[in-house]
Image (cartoon, rainbow, N blue to C red; front, side, top):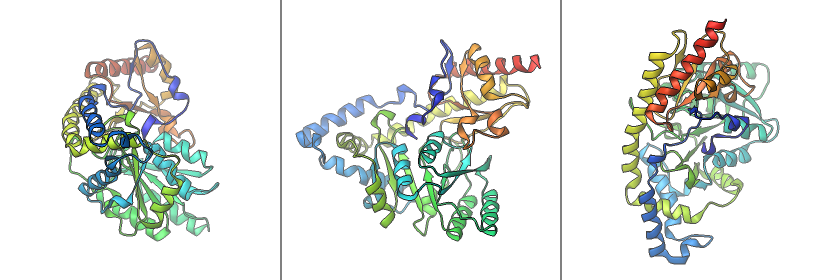
Amino acid sequence: MDGEGYGAWRSITAPDAVSLVFGFPYPESFPNEELVAAARAVFDEEGDVALQYTGGEYAGALADVVAEHARDRGVDCDPGDVVLTNGSTRAIDAVCRTFLEPGDGVFAEAPTFMGALNLFRGYDAAVTGLPTDADGLDVGALETELAARRAAGRPAPKLLYTIPTFQNPTGATMPLERRRRLLELAAEYDFVVLEDDAYGALRYDGDPVPPLKALDEEGRVVRVGTFSKTIAPGVRTGWVVAEGEIREQVERMNPGGTNTFTRGVLARYCREGHFERNVEAFRGEYERRRDRMLDALDAHMPPEATWTDPDGGFFVWVTLPEGLDSAALLPEAAEEGVLYLPGEHFYPDGGDERGERGLRLSFSYAAPDEIDRGIEGLARACQRVLDAR
């Protein structure tokens, strides 16, 4: 999910307003000293080889690091199952190149990551948004849609895209039984599941749930991830995990080579144990920001508003009181000193009523006191419009 996607939302600005728009890590989380030390070590140990096209041994070792992290999450993964990419959006793009032709069907959660929606549109895929609830993708609704298509003689999707853990934009996590049922349906109707796990390492509450790939017995789950949320966005390094022919085809379709020097630095950084230590440290900071946002929403928002309570990740999804439109409210909110991302950006067709009333707030980037001010401004904007009705 590197780069947060593309589109007109990048023009959402207002002087002095608190931005709760961006799903960026807070700057103090960046491990500057450790990355500098890792870069020096790579130069000291590998010299100019580290700057060649193929890189040195550390660059080659990053796939081992990714495989090891996947195994820690319960995924049966060898380094040979890993395709490294320039960020996770490029990983999703490589999977699209592998599977999609114009007109092919893609199922996605609604709402979902807008960067993925833009990619699907770029491949002229027919995207169907499936409903979500507090537990993520509504697998019952998926089953109903698949059965209806079969009865009508229509094809199943080529691909189902899901963010099952700390979903962007809602923060929801799919329970174990839903995950298992999803994979049963994928086997029955013969489609590939693209699992986006950008936030899986960022759990603050609750018990871990195995990734879909850890439950995959048929090799039909293709898993993508990134270091952008757990090290820094600027390293621009993601990956695809898949087996056999799928992995080989993704490798062929991977657009452009990765930065081998960055790969070497990341491998050295992780081998020194910095990854685990730093993720553990900033989990607490993200939890503090999340709790600050939830407390502020509870204290200030109109009683008719509702919002999600994520166990991890970067985002809270707010549903405004009936009659409010999050896109139309944005100028009022900007005047009150806060910016957010309207819900319409996260739906394949621009959104239904949930998209109109929904909005995404990011607690990952702003400081805690800014979060307070931003939510107070959002509440004032809502109340101003409600009072004028």
